[in-house]
Amino acid sequence: MGFEEGRIKGDRYFEEIVFPKTLLPSHMSERGNTHLADAVKENREWLDEQLSRHGAILFQGFDVCSAEDFSSVVEAFGWEEMSYEFRRRRAFEDCRKEFASKVLFFCLEPPPEGGETSIVLSHVIVKKMEEAMPEFVAKLMKFGVVIQQITPKESTSEKAPRKTWQQLLQTKDKAEAIKL
Image 1 (cartoon, rainbow, N blue to C red):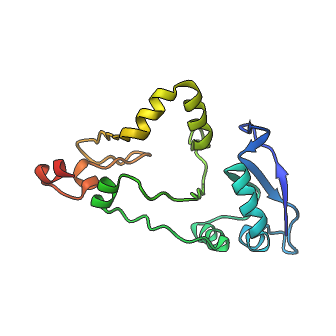
Image 2: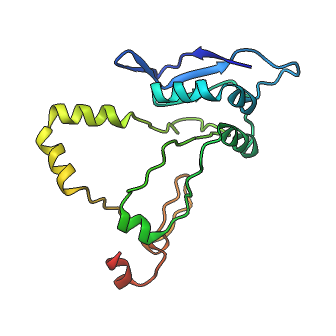
Image 3: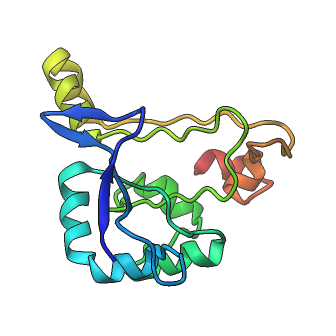
């Protein structure tokens, strides 16, 4: 099974390269299914090339109907997994010296409205910033960035749950939290 190129309303072009690259199943299997994990296994090298060139791939029209199906797709790529365990000291002291080289999203049930997850080509943003404000970018490169996160007093159970500082820093001690 292969892929066909698709188009979406949000397609953007950067230096004549579409972002994200949208891929559809080229055909149905004998059972009428379009198994993305199988297609990934068969076309892994080509998909890696497309991802490197376009920065993001949007797969549409495949039978990915559960978290288990999505997990099979992730495993089919064969990429090394980066642990997502929260370690407060590492997260705050190292301040993102280690980045994920790839991030995968899955939507089981799209919301009736909104719900878009924004993705950007960070190298394009940096290039535009360097062109528009080179002194500012140089200052960021020299001194780094401090990120401040404002947390609620209580955990929220809304559609977008937010953690309290105690949950985020994994301590109830304000003095220890300040040290972090």
